[in-house]
Amino acid sequence: MTMSALGEPCVLLKLGEIVLKGKNREVFERRLISNIRDALKELGIKLDVRKRHGVIAIFLPEGATAEQARTVAERVADVPGLVWIHPAWRVAKDPEAVLKAGLELVGEREEVKRKASFAVRSRRRDKRFPLRSNELDRLVGGAINDEYGLPVDLKNPALTLSIEVDRDEVFVFTGGLPGQGGLPVGSSGRALVLMSGGIDSPVAAYRMMRRGLHVDFLHFSGIPFSTSESIYKAYALVKKLDRFQGGSRLWVVPFGKAQQSIRNSGQERLAVITQRRLMLKTAEEVAHRIRAAALITGDALGQVSSQTLTNITAQDHAVELPILRPLVGWDKTEIMAEARRIDTLAISELPDEDCCSLLAPKRAETRAKIADLKQIEKRLDAEELAVQLADSIQEYTL
Image 1 (cartoon, rainbow, N blue to C red):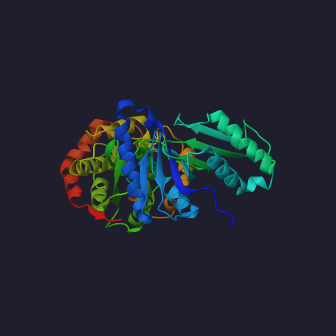
Image 2: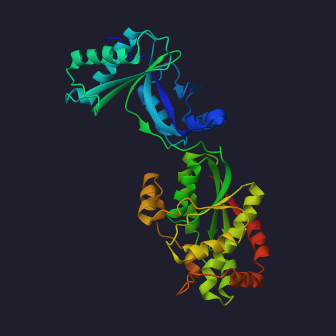
Image 3: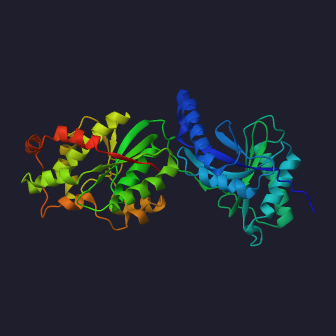
């Protein structure tokens, strides 16, 4: 039996916009590495995460398999801050060792049977290596051409063999998994998501995680005038999103009696905006308690009556905390495509009795006046009601 030339399996991680952070780059890298380690704890494998120049390498324990490296790669692909994840092989810093590893790795690929085109892409981060990048390309590429008869295509190859010469070793790999991009979760602070059971708010939460926010979730339930179905959906959605950040928390507000008070106020056309403002006031109170610096909603401009520019302005006026709306310029098709990509769409489309449906008027106001809303809130004593609602929240542990 011929001994493998591939050396040790590992995972090579490529950074995105973090590399543009200048003097602050190290802070972002430390946060990213911490997030990677936290995400990988669930695998129960002893891993060594090391920072390199522009990349991060994950080394597996002795005797680890390529399948284990693939498992590590798939898990870390959900961690924001990375653009590419490559299951790779770690070989000695010797041209002959690199040549043998490249030949063996290409020989295992399906493209060889189809005589598909190939290219070799080398990158020499350690300039002490005896061969330049183009010399290494020619050495390994020529050997592959001789051994397997594959045609070379440097512009659009069906198979690319990547060789990266680093400080202590050489990484050899083909292909990889796309990462989430963005910034490491936690590098931009903490925010609170108003989490419905619908399609939009989970996508909004994910988009802000990618911008470095660690988010918690606040769900408004119609209890005691509705079932618990919306809570189950919200829980399932938060569980699904937690793979991107870890440590997610879900709070549920029993909102039915407050809705009843709004309905009894006699201002049917303003009921939806009044409800939204009360939700935001309650969320702001909760945010202060958990030290969140902003609120996040899934609003998209013009999507429904409460999301006209006038009504969005009226909602902003209800609180002092900034309200982040990452989907404000998206249409429903774009939002659904993103929900499908992050695997929340199927859960969001499950039927439930959303609390908002309990207060839907025949005709909603699209140009609400702040003065009219304040009058309603004065009769409701909305500020005190928001505090009472915040006091009534229940935390659901993931």
